[in-house]
Image (tube, rainbow, N blue to C red; front, side, top):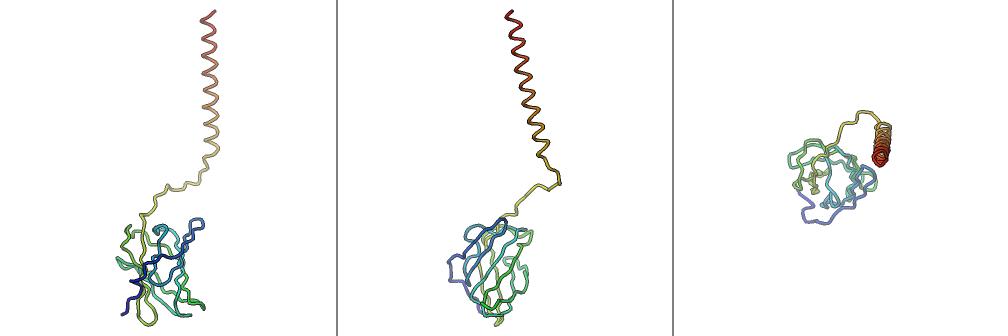
Length: 157
C-alpha cells in the first residue's frame, strides 16, 4: 500500500455558506484550515487530482469509520456532502483516508471540533410573549413613577 500526501502541508480552499462548509483540497492538504469540522454538521468536500471516473473508498481515522465510496467526475474531482458522525472525538489527530482504485491511500489531515450543543426546538414562537412582557414592564414602571409623584405631592401640601 502506498501512502500519499504526508509531505504536503499546505491548506485547502474553504468556503462557508450558511451552515455548510465547502472544502476543496489537493492530495495531502489539510481539510480544515479555517475552522474544524463539527460532528452532525454538513461538510462538503471537493478533492482534486484524481483520475476521471476513479472509484474511491473513504474512511475517517483515528478510530476507523467508513464514510462511503465516491467516484471522481470527468474532471477528476471527488465531490461529497458528508456529515461528520456524532461521537467522533474532538481533536486534530484525525485523518481522512481515501483509498484509490490502484490501492494507494491519500491521507488528508482533518481537525474535528466538539459537537455543538443546542437547545431543542419546541415549535413555539416567543416574540409575542416577549413584546407583551416588555410592555407590562414599561407600564408598571409608569404606574410606579406616577404613584411616587402623587405621594410626593401629597406630603408637600
